[in-house]
Amino acid sequence: MHPSFTASFKRVLIRISVVAMLCIATASLMAAQEDGRKLKTRVEPTCPEVARKFNIGGTVRLEITVARSGEVKTIKAIGGHPVLIDSAMSAVREWRYEPSTQETTTTVEIKFTPGA
Image (cartoon, rainbow, N blue to C red):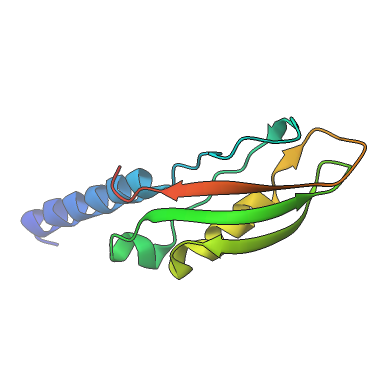
């Protein structure tokens, strides 16, 4: 294998790795918890391959119902780019809140920033 080809290939791989790491979504819980429940475990979403490829970013808004146990019971997408919604929902499904005496509903926003 020619040395210049190997060096070029390595540079391409490094660039792809850097873009992938930078595109890992930065998720933020923007909505205030009206009921005061604390988020105990938050899983960060991964940026979908197609979003990285086409530099798609934005905010996904989800309405979630949290069971008394603290597990996310239901998730409903109420806004955001369709390419990002599944990734946001998969991550939020793994979130855990502190237990409560009743189910609660709140809205969360997951922000995807490609290349940030």
